[in-house]
Image (cartoon, rainbow, N blue to C red; front, side, top):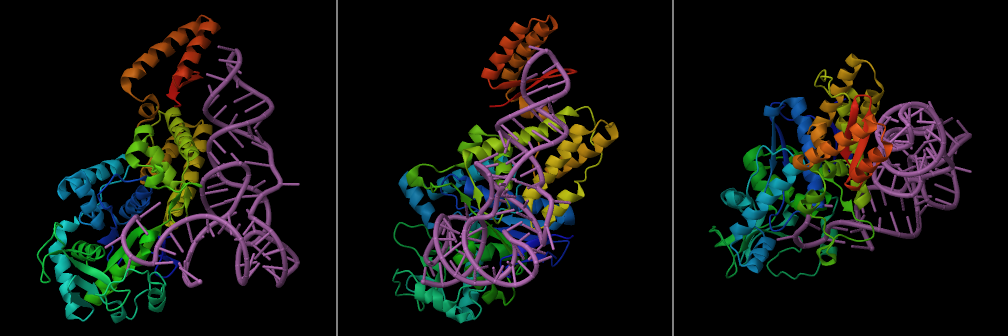
Length: 456
RNA sequence: GGUCACGUGGCGGAGUGGUGACGCAGCGGACUGCAAAUCCGUGUACCCCGGUUCAAUUCCGGGCGUGACCUCCA
Protein backbone atom coordinates (compact mmCIF):
# COMPACT_ATOMS: atom_id res chain seq x y z
CA UNK A 1 0.00 0.00 0.00
CA UNK A 2 1.40 3.38 -0.91
CA UNK A 3 1.56 6.15 1.67
CA UNK A 4 -1.83 7.45 2.74
CA UNK A 5 -2.34 10.69 4.65
CA UNK A 6 -5.40 12.22 6.23
CA UNK A 7 -5.85 15.45 4.32
CA UNK A 8 -7.46 18.20 6.36
CA UNK A 9 -8.61 19.79 3.13
CA UNK A 10 -10.88 16.86 2.30
CA UNK A 11 -11.21 15.32 5.78
CA UNK A 12 -10.39 11.96 4.29
CA UNK A 13 -7.46 9.59 4.10
CA UNK A 14 -5.95 9.84 0.63
CA UNK A 15 -3.21 8.05 -1.27
CA UNK A 16 -0.21 10.33 -1.51
CA UNK A 17 1.10 11.02 -4.99
CA UNK A 18 3.72 13.74 -5.34
CA UNK A 19 3.57 16.13 -8.28
CA UNK A 20 7.14 15.20 -9.10
CA UNK A 21 8.69 12.09 -7.50
CA UNK A 22 12.14 13.55 -8.06
CA UNK A 23 11.25 16.61 -5.98
CA UNK A 24 8.77 15.92 -3.21
CA UNK A 25 8.06 19.08 -1.24
CA UNK A 26 7.00 19.46 2.36
CA UNK A 27 6.64 22.50 4.62
CA UNK A 28 6.20 22.65 8.38
CA UNK A 29 5.41 25.80 10.31
CA UNK A 30 8.36 26.07 12.66
CA UNK A 31 8.86 27.84 15.95
CA UNK A 32 8.63 31.47 16.88
CA UNK A 33 11.94 31.92 18.63
CA UNK A 34 11.24 34.04 21.68
CA UNK A 35 11.44 31.48 24.52
CA UNK A 36 12.31 27.88 25.31
CA UNK A 37 10.21 25.39 23.36
CA UNK A 38 7.92 23.12 25.35
CA UNK A 39 7.20 19.48 24.69
CA UNK A 40 3.99 20.33 22.84
CA UNK A 41 6.08 22.22 20.32
CA UNK A 42 8.14 19.09 19.84
CA UNK A 43 5.24 16.92 18.70
CA UNK A 44 4.98 18.28 15.13
CA UNK A 45 8.77 18.36 14.79
CA UNK A 46 9.00 14.69 15.76
CA UNK A 47 5.98 13.22 13.97
CA UNK A 48 6.69 15.05 10.74
CA UNK A 49 10.32 14.03 11.04
CA UNK A 50 9.02 10.48 10.77
CA UNK A 51 7.10 11.51 7.66
CA UNK A 52 10.26 13.11 6.27
CA UNK A 53 12.21 9.90 6.88
CA UNK A 54 9.48 7.81 5.28
CA UNK A 55 9.38 10.03 2.19
CA UNK A 56 13.17 9.88 1.89
CA UNK A 57 13.03 6.12 2.06
CA UNK A 58 10.45 6.00 -0.73
CA UNK A 59 11.72 8.70 -3.08
CA UNK A 60 15.38 8.91 -2.11
CA UNK A 61 17.17 11.30 0.19
CA UNK A 62 18.01 13.68 -2.63
CA UNK A 63 14.42 13.90 -3.87
CA UNK A 64 12.65 15.20 -0.79
CA UNK A 65 12.80 18.90 0.04
CA UNK A 66 11.62 19.65 3.54
CA UNK A 67 11.41 23.24 4.73
CA UNK A 68 10.80 24.15 8.35
CA UNK A 69 10.90 27.85 8.96
CA UNK A 70 12.11 29.95 11.85
CA UNK A 71 9.84 32.85 12.70
CA UNK A 72 12.25 35.50 13.87
CA UNK A 73 10.05 38.55 13.58
CA UNK A 74 6.89 38.70 15.64
CA UNK A 75 5.14 40.75 18.30
CA UNK A 76 6.08 38.29 21.03
CA UNK A 77 9.73 38.52 20.08
CA UNK A 78 9.61 42.28 20.26
CA UNK A 79 8.08 42.09 23.72
CA UNK A 80 10.59 39.49 24.91
CA UNK A 81 13.54 41.54 23.66
CA UNK A 82 12.23 44.65 25.39
CA UNK A 83 11.76 42.77 28.66
CA UNK A 84 15.28 41.38 28.49
CA UNK A 85 16.74 44.67 27.42
CA UNK A 86 18.46 42.88 24.57
CA UNK A 87 18.45 43.41 20.83
CA UNK A 88 15.95 41.31 18.96
CA UNK A 89 18.67 39.39 17.19
CA UNK A 90 20.16 38.33 20.53
CA UNK A 91 16.84 36.78 21.51
CA UNK A 92 16.18 35.09 18.19
CA UNK A 93 19.74 33.80 17.84
CA UNK A 94 19.69 32.29 21.29
CA UNK A 95 16.37 30.53 20.98
CA UNK A 96 17.01 29.40 17.42
CA UNK A 97 20.15 27.71 18.68
CA UNK A 98 18.28 26.14 21.58
CA UNK A 99 15.48 24.93 19.32
CA UNK A 100 17.94 23.23 16.98
CA UNK A 101 19.71 21.64 19.90
CA UNK A 102 16.44 20.44 21.47
CA UNK A 103 15.09 18.92 18.28
CA UNK A 104 18.43 17.28 17.48
CA UNK A 105 18.32 15.81 20.97
CA UNK A 106 14.97 14.26 20.10
CA UNK A 107 16.48 12.60 17.06
CA UNK A 108 14.91 15.03 14.60
CA UNK A 109 16.86 15.28 11.35
CA UNK A 110 17.71 18.78 10.21
CA UNK A 111 15.23 19.85 7.54
CA UNK A 112 16.54 20.37 4.04
CA UNK A 113 15.96 24.10 4.39
CA UNK A 114 15.40 26.19 7.49
CA UNK A 115 14.41 29.58 6.15
CA UNK A 116 14.37 32.69 8.34
CA UNK A 117 11.45 35.06 8.03
CA UNK A 118 13.73 38.09 8.22
CA UNK A 119 15.68 36.82 5.22
CA UNK A 120 12.54 36.85 3.05
CA UNK A 121 11.12 40.31 3.58
CA UNK A 122 11.66 41.11 -0.11
CA UNK A 123 9.65 38.09 -1.23
CA UNK A 124 6.87 39.01 1.19
CA UNK A 125 6.69 42.56 -0.14
CA UNK A 126 6.55 41.23 -3.71
CA UNK A 127 3.72 38.90 -2.76
CA UNK A 128 1.77 41.70 -1.11
CA UNK A 129 2.22 43.88 -4.19
CA UNK A 130 0.76 41.14 -6.37
CA UNK A 131 -2.22 40.81 -4.06
CA UNK A 132 -2.85 44.55 -4.17
CA UNK A 133 -2.55 44.56 -7.97
CA UNK A 134 -5.09 41.78 -8.26
CA UNK A 135 -7.50 43.51 -5.95
CA UNK A 136 -7.21 41.10 -3.03
CA UNK A 137 -5.51 43.52 -0.67
CA UNK A 138 -5.61 47.19 0.18
CA UNK A 139 -3.31 49.64 1.90
CA UNK A 140 -4.42 51.52 5.01
CA UNK A 141 -2.75 54.05 7.27
CA UNK A 142 -1.66 51.18 9.53
CA UNK A 143 -0.41 48.80 6.85
CA UNK A 144 -1.87 46.47 4.29
CA UNK A 145 -4.82 44.13 4.79
CA UNK A 146 -6.02 41.10 2.89
CA UNK A 147 -9.66 41.51 1.92
CA UNK A 148 -11.26 38.20 2.77
CA UNK A 149 -14.60 38.68 0.89
CA UNK A 150 -12.58 39.03 -2.32
CA UNK A 151 -11.80 35.33 -2.18
CA UNK A 152 -14.84 33.20 -2.93
CA UNK A 153 -13.40 29.97 -1.53
CA UNK A 154 -12.08 31.42 1.72
CA UNK A 155 -12.66 29.01 4.59
CA UNK A 156 -12.30 25.78 2.64
CA UNK A 157 -9.60 24.35 4.91
CA UNK A 158 -11.23 25.07 8.25
CA UNK A 159 -14.79 24.64 7.05
CA UNK A 160 -15.79 28.09 8.13
CA UNK A 161 -18.20 30.34 6.31
CA UNK A 162 -17.43 34.01 6.08
CA UNK A 163 -20.77 34.87 7.62
CA UNK A 164 -19.87 32.84 10.70
CA UNK A 165 -16.62 34.70 11.03
CA UNK A 166 -18.32 38.05 10.81
CA UNK A 167 -20.98 37.02 13.28
CA UNK A 168 -18.49 35.57 15.74
CA UNK A 169 -15.76 38.11 15.23
CA UNK A 170 -14.22 39.06 18.50
CA UNK A 171 -14.48 42.65 19.49
CA UNK A 172 -11.16 44.16 18.55
CA UNK A 173 -12.51 47.14 16.72
CA UNK A 174 -10.24 47.95 13.84
CA UNK A 175 -11.47 50.82 11.78
CA UNK A 176 -8.94 50.16 9.04
CA UNK A 177 -10.53 46.85 8.11
CA UNK A 178 -13.17 46.81 5.41
CA UNK A 179 -14.42 43.53 6.79
CA UNK A 180 -13.94 42.12 10.29
CA UNK A 181 -12.37 38.98 8.83
CA UNK A 182 -9.68 40.89 6.95
CA UNK A 183 -6.18 40.26 8.25
CA UNK A 184 -2.87 42.09 8.19
CA UNK A 185 -0.29 41.45 5.51
CA UNK A 186 1.91 44.35 6.53
CA UNK A 187 1.97 46.35 9.73
CA UNK A 188 3.23 49.91 9.83
CA UNK A 189 5.92 50.36 12.48
CA UNK A 190 5.11 52.19 15.65
CA UNK A 191 7.86 54.18 17.36
CA UNK A 192 10.67 52.04 18.77
CA UNK A 193 9.61 49.00 16.80
CA UNK A 194 11.86 47.21 14.32
CA UNK A 195 10.99 47.89 10.70
CA UNK A 196 11.83 47.29 7.08
CA UNK A 197 11.26 49.80 4.29
CA UNK A 198 8.36 49.00 1.99
CA UNK A 199 6.15 50.69 -0.61
CA UNK A 200 3.75 51.34 2.29
CA UNK A 201 6.31 52.88 4.55
CA UNK A 202 8.44 51.34 7.27
CA UNK A 203 6.89 48.31 8.93
CA UNK A 204 7.00 44.60 9.40
CA UNK A 205 5.16 41.64 7.89
CA UNK A 206 1.99 40.14 9.29
CA UNK A 207 2.16 36.66 10.74
CA UNK A 208 0.80 34.64 7.85
CA UNK A 209 2.63 36.13 4.90
CA UNK A 210 6.02 34.71 5.81
CA UNK A 211 4.99 31.11 5.28
CA UNK A 212 3.43 31.87 1.90
CA UNK A 213 6.57 33.71 0.83
CA UNK A 214 9.05 31.14 2.09
CA UNK A 215 7.15 28.12 0.83
CA UNK A 216 6.80 29.77 -2.57
CA UNK A 217 10.46 30.76 -2.68
CA UNK A 218 11.92 27.40 -1.75
CA UNK A 219 9.31 24.81 -2.69
CA UNK A 220 7.35 26.32 -5.56
CA UNK A 221 3.86 27.70 -6.05
CA UNK A 222 2.17 24.39 -5.28
CA UNK A 223 3.73 22.24 -2.58
CA UNK A 224 2.95 18.61 -1.89
CA UNK A 225 2.56 18.52 1.88
CA UNK A 226 1.95 21.29 4.37
CA UNK A 227 2.07 20.30 8.03
CA UNK A 228 1.50 21.91 11.40
CA UNK A 229 -0.37 21.79 14.68
CA UNK A 230 -4.14 21.61 14.34
CA UNK A 231 -4.52 24.90 16.15
CA UNK A 232 -2.98 26.51 13.08
CA UNK A 233 -5.76 25.41 10.73
CA UNK A 234 -7.52 28.63 11.47
CA UNK A 235 -6.58 31.31 10.90
CA UNK A 236 -2.96 30.71 9.99
CA UNK A 237 -3.20 28.04 7.33
CA UNK A 238 -6.47 29.36 5.99
CA UNK A 239 -4.78 32.69 5.48
CA UNK A 240 -1.70 31.16 3.90
CA UNK A 241 -4.01 29.57 1.36
CA UNK A 242 -5.74 32.87 0.74
CA UNK A 243 -2.49 34.76 0.19
CA UNK A 244 -0.79 32.18 -1.97
CA UNK A 245 -3.72 31.07 -4.08
CA UNK A 246 -4.97 34.57 -4.77
CA UNK A 247 -1.47 35.64 -5.80
CA UNK A 248 -0.64 32.64 -7.99
CA UNK A 249 -4.02 31.34 -9.06
CA UNK A 250 -2.76 27.84 -8.23
CA UNK A 251 -3.42 25.44 -5.36
CA UNK A 252 -1.03 26.21 -2.50
CA UNK A 253 -0.68 22.77 -0.90
CA UNK A 254 -2.07 19.43 -2.04
CA UNK A 255 -2.05 17.60 1.29
CA UNK A 256 -2.59 19.32 4.62
CA UNK A 257 -1.66 17.32 7.70
CA UNK A 258 -2.20 18.46 11.28
CA UNK A 259 -1.10 16.98 14.58
CA UNK A 260 -3.22 16.89 17.74
CA UNK A 261 -2.34 18.39 21.08
CA UNK A 262 -0.79 17.00 24.21
CA UNK A 263 -3.12 16.82 27.22
CA UNK A 264 -1.82 17.37 30.69
CA UNK A 265 -4.61 15.80 32.69
CA UNK A 266 -6.70 18.13 34.76
CA UNK A 267 -4.05 20.75 34.94
CA UNK A 268 -3.65 22.80 31.88
CA UNK A 269 -0.10 23.51 30.95
CA UNK A 270 0.41 27.20 31.36
CA UNK A 271 3.17 29.49 32.35
CA UNK A 272 1.14 30.95 35.19
CA UNK A 273 0.81 27.50 36.79
CA UNK A 274 4.53 26.93 36.36
CA UNK A 275 3.99 23.47 34.95
CA UNK A 276 5.25 24.06 31.46
CA UNK A 277 7.17 21.00 30.31
CA UNK A 278 10.13 22.53 28.51
CA UNK A 279 12.07 20.29 26.16
CA UNK A 280 15.44 21.30 27.51
CA UNK A 281 14.37 20.56 31.09
CA UNK A 282 12.94 17.18 30.18
CA UNK A 283 16.12 16.35 28.31
CA UNK A 284 18.12 16.89 31.48
CA UNK A 285 16.12 14.10 33.12
CA UNK A 286 15.42 11.72 30.26
CA UNK A 287 17.23 10.46 27.20
CA UNK A 288 15.94 12.16 24.07
CA UNK A 289 14.76 8.83 22.72
CA UNK A 290 12.44 8.40 25.70
CA UNK A 291 10.77 11.72 24.89
CA UNK A 292 10.64 10.81 21.23
CA UNK A 293 9.10 7.42 22.03
CA UNK A 294 6.48 9.09 24.21
CA UNK A 295 5.56 11.50 21.43
CA UNK A 296 5.22 8.66 18.93
CA UNK A 297 3.24 6.40 21.25
CA UNK A 298 -0.07 7.88 20.13
CA UNK A 299 -1.30 8.50 16.62
CA UNK A 300 -0.23 11.99 15.53
CA UNK A 301 -3.76 13.29 15.02
CA UNK A 302 -5.08 12.03 18.35
CA UNK A 303 -4.61 13.79 21.66
CA UNK A 304 -1.82 12.35 23.79
CA UNK A 305 -1.95 12.19 27.57
CA UNK A 306 1.34 13.56 28.82
CA UNK A 307 2.07 12.51 32.39
CA UNK A 308 5.06 11.28 34.40
CA UNK A 309 3.99 7.64 34.01
CA UNK A 310 4.16 8.01 30.23
CA UNK A 311 7.87 8.76 30.46
CA UNK A 312 8.50 5.84 32.84
CA UNK A 313 6.66 3.53 30.47
CA UNK A 314 8.49 4.89 27.44
CA UNK A 315 11.81 4.29 29.14
CA UNK A 316 10.76 0.73 30.04
CA UNK A 317 9.66 0.10 26.47
CA UNK A 318 12.98 1.22 25.04
CA UNK A 319 14.84 -0.81 27.67
CA UNK A 320 13.02 -3.92 26.50
CA UNK A 321 14.02 -3.30 22.88
CA UNK A 322 17.61 -2.44 23.72
CA UNK A 323 17.86 -5.56 25.88
CA UNK A 324 16.67 -7.71 23.00
CA UNK A 325 19.34 -6.19 20.76
CA UNK A 326 21.97 -6.47 23.47
CA UNK A 327 21.30 -10.18 23.96
CA UNK A 328 22.34 -10.88 20.39
CA UNK A 329 25.20 -8.42 20.42
CA UNK A 330 27.50 -10.93 18.74
CA UNK A 331 25.10 -11.48 15.84
CA UNK A 332 25.61 -9.23 12.83
CA UNK A 333 22.25 -7.91 11.58
CA UNK A 334 21.22 -9.23 8.20
CA UNK A 335 19.65 -6.72 5.87
CA UNK A 336 18.73 -3.10 6.34
CA UNK A 337 15.05 -3.30 5.53
CA UNK A 338 12.32 -2.76 8.09
CA UNK A 339 9.70 -5.48 8.31
CA UNK A 340 6.78 -5.14 5.89
CA UNK A 341 4.32 -4.79 8.77
CA UNK A 342 6.16 -1.75 10.09
CA UNK A 343 6.26 -0.06 6.70
CA UNK A 344 2.60 -0.81 6.23
CA UNK A 345 1.75 0.78 9.56
CA UNK A 346 3.72 3.95 8.86
CA UNK A 347 2.36 4.26 5.34
CA UNK A 348 -1.14 4.03 6.75
CA UNK A 349 -1.30 7.67 7.84
CA UNK A 350 1.76 7.36 10.09
CA UNK A 351 0.27 4.77 12.44
CA UNK A 352 3.24 4.97 14.80
CA UNK A 353 1.56 3.02 17.67
CA UNK A 354 1.13 0.06 15.36
CA UNK A 355 4.70 0.44 14.17
CA UNK A 356 5.92 0.40 17.78
CA UNK A 357 3.85 -2.73 18.42
CA UNK A 358 5.63 -4.32 15.46
CA UNK A 359 8.98 -3.49 17.06
CA UNK A 360 7.85 -5.33 20.19
CA UNK A 361 6.83 -8.28 18.06
CA UNK A 362 10.28 -8.41 16.49
CA UNK A 363 11.94 -8.09 19.89
CA UNK A 364 9.87 -10.96 21.29
CA UNK A 365 10.71 -13.15 18.32
CA UNK A 366 14.35 -12.23 18.75
CA UNK A 367 14.28 -13.15 22.44
CA UNK A 368 12.79 -16.53 21.61
CA UNK A 369 14.93 -17.39 18.62
CA UNK A 370 17.84 -19.75 19.07
CA UNK A 371 18.82 -19.82 15.44
CA UNK A 372 21.65 -17.46 14.52
CA UNK A 373 20.47 -16.90 10.96
CA UNK A 374 16.98 -16.09 12.12
CA UNK A 375 18.34 -13.80 14.83
CA UNK A 376 20.36 -11.92 12.23
CA UNK A 377 17.27 -11.29 10.13
CA UNK A 378 15.13 -10.23 13.08
CA UNK A 379 17.84 -7.98 14.44
CA UNK A 380 18.23 -6.36 11.05
CA UNK A 381 14.50 -5.72 10.77
CA UNK A 382 14.29 -4.41 14.31
CA UNK A 383 17.17 -1.99 13.93
CA UNK A 384 16.07 -0.85 10.47
CA UNK A 385 12.47 -0.35 11.57
CA UNK A 386 13.45 1.52 14.70
CA UNK A 387 15.96 3.52 12.67
CA UNK A 388 13.25 4.62 10.26
CA UNK A 389 11.46 6.08 13.26
CA UNK A 390 14.63 7.62 14.68
CA UNK A 391 14.83 5.12 17.55
CA UNK A 392 17.49 2.70 18.86
CA UNK A 393 20.13 5.09 17.62
CA UNK A 394 22.77 4.28 20.24
CA UNK A 395 24.61 1.10 21.13
CA UNK A 396 22.79 -0.98 23.77
CA UNK A 397 25.83 -0.89 26.05
CA UNK A 398 25.93 2.88 25.88
CA UNK A 399 22.19 3.04 26.50
CA UNK A 400 22.45 1.02 29.69
CA UNK A 401 25.82 2.14 31.01
CA UNK A 402 25.34 5.89 31.06
CA UNK A 403 28.30 8.10 31.97
CA UNK A 404 31.52 6.18 31.43
CA UNK A 405 33.49 7.22 34.54
CA UNK A 406 30.80 5.96 36.86
CA UNK A 407 30.33 2.90 34.71
CA UNK A 408 33.90 1.79 35.42
CA UNK A 409 33.16 1.93 39.13
CA UNK A 410 30.06 -0.16 38.65
CA UNK A 411 32.04 -2.66 36.60
CA UNK A 412 34.38 -3.07 39.57
CA UNK A 413 31.49 -3.73 41.96
CA UNK A 414 29.99 -6.23 39.56
CA UNK A 415 33.36 -8.00 39.31
CA UNK A 416 33.60 -8.13 43.11
CA UNK A 417 30.16 -9.64 43.28
CA UNK A 418 31.02 -12.20 40.63
CA UNK A 419 33.99 -13.25 42.75
CA UNK A 420 31.80 -13.53 45.84
CA UNK A 421 29.32 -15.65 43.95
CA UNK A 422 32.08 -17.90 42.70
CA UNK A 423 33.04 -18.42 46.33
CA UNK A 424 29.38 -19.02 47.16
CA UNK A 425 29.53 -16.06 49.53
CA UNK A 426 25.86 -15.22 48.97
CA UNK A 427 25.71 -12.66 51.76
CA UNK A 428 28.45 -10.55 50.19
CA UNK A 429 27.00 -11.02 46.70
CA UNK A 430 23.60 -9.85 47.86
CA UNK A 431 25.11 -6.93 49.77
CA UNK A 432 26.77 -5.67 46.60
CA UNK A 433 23.60 -6.18 44.63
CA UNK A 434 21.67 -4.16 47.19
CA UNK A 435 24.23 -1.41 46.99
CA UNK A 436 23.98 -1.35 43.21
CA UNK A 437 20.20 -1.31 43.35
CA UNK A 438 20.38 1.68 45.63
CA UNK A 439 22.46 3.39 42.98
CA UNK A 440 19.84 2.64 40.35
CA UNK A 441 21.72 -0.24 38.80
CA UNK A 442 20.12 -3.58 38.05
CA UNK A 443 22.12 -6.78 37.77
CA UNK A 444 21.33 -9.52 35.33
CA UNK A 445 23.10 -12.84 35.84
CA UNK A 446 23.44 -14.96 32.74
CA UNK A 447 25.25 -18.01 31.54
CA UNK A 448 28.08 -15.89 30.17
CA UNK A 449 28.48 -13.72 33.26
CA UNK A 450 26.66 -10.77 34.78
CA UNK A 451 25.53 -7.68 32.93
CA UNK A 452 23.95 -4.58 34.34
CA UNK A 453 21.80 -1.64 33.38
CA UNK A 454 20.56 1.57 34.81
CA UNK A 455 16.97 1.61 35.90
CA UNK A 456 16.87 5.18 37.27
C1' G B 1 -23.34 30.63 20.22
C1' G B 2 -20.57 28.43 15.74
C1' U B 3 -16.80 24.87 13.64
C1' C B 4 -13.85 20.48 14.51
C1' A B 5 -11.78 16.50 17.19
C1' C B 6 -11.94 12.87 21.00
C1' G B 7 -14.19 9.49 25.14
C1' U B 8 -11.33 1.59 25.10
C1' G B 9 -8.99 -2.53 31.04
C1' G B 10 -4.80 0.17 37.02
C1' C B 11 -1.82 3.36 33.16
C1' G B 12 -0.48 4.59 27.86
C1' G B 13 -2.62 3.23 23.45
C1' A B 14 -4.18 0.26 18.62
C1' G B 15 -8.19 -1.96 16.18
C1' U B 16 -12.69 -4.28 14.60
C1' G B 17 -20.15 -5.52 12.61
C1' G B 18 -19.26 -11.71 15.32
C1' U B 19 -12.18 -15.46 17.92
C1' G B 20 -10.07 -9.29 24.19
C1' A B 21 -3.38 -5.56 19.19
C1' C B 22 0.95 -3.99 21.82
C1' G B 23 3.73 -2.07 26.03
C1' C B 24 3.99 -0.79 31.36
C1' A B 25 2.06 -2.32 36.12
C1' G B 26 -0.25 -6.85 38.75
C1' C B 27 -0.85 -12.24 39.52
C1' G B 28 0.79 -17.69 38.72
C1' G B 29 4.69 -20.85 36.66
C1' A B 30 9.69 -22.12 34.33
C1' C B 31 14.71 -20.61 34.89
C1' U B 32 18.03 -18.73 39.14
C1' G B 33 21.94 -19.85 45.28
C1' C B 34 18.04 -15.91 45.90
C1' A B 35 16.83 -12.26 42.39
C1' A B 36 16.69 -9.56 37.84
C1' A B 37 16.27 -10.30 32.70
C1' U B 38 13.91 -13.81 29.44
C1' C B 39 10.13 -17.40 28.36
C1' C B 40 5.03 -19.64 29.32
C1' G B 41 0.27 -18.61 31.34
C1' U B 42 -3.17 -14.97 33.33
C1' G B 43 -7.86 -9.56 32.60
C1' U B 44 -16.16 -10.79 32.41
C1' A B 45 -12.23 -2.92 28.63
C1' C B 46 -14.70 -0.36 24.94
C1' C B 47 -19.03 7.16 28.46
C1' C B 48 -24.79 6.91 28.74
C1' C B 49 -29.65 6.16 26.23
C1' G B 50 -32.22 4.80 21.98
C1' G B 51 -32.19 2.74 16.76
C1' U B 52 -30.48 -0.57 12.53
C1' U B 53 -28.86 -5.84 12.58
C1' C B 54 -29.18 -12.78 13.58
C1' A B 55 -25.07 -9.97 16.08
C1' A B 56 -22.46 -3.18 17.94
C1' U B 57 -17.25 -1.34 21.53
C1' U B 58 -17.36 -0.92 16.04
C1' C B 59 -22.91 1.84 11.89
C1' C B 60 -27.03 5.80 12.76
C1' G B 61 -29.57 9.44 16.16
C1' G B 62 -29.67 11.90 20.84
C1' G B 63 -27.30 13.01 25.50
C1' C B 64 -23.16 13.73 28.80
C1' G B 65 -17.95 14.72 29.32
C1' U B 66 -13.02 16.48 27.68
C1' G B 67 -10.07 19.30 24.36
C1' A B 68 -8.88 22.67 20.15
C1' C B 69 -10.23 26.78 17.09
C1' C B 70 -13.50 31.32 16.20
C1' U B 71 -7.29 37.04 14.12
C1' C B 72 -1.40 36.09 15.42
C1' C B 73 -1.28 29.47 20.72
C1' A B 74 2.11 22.96 18.30
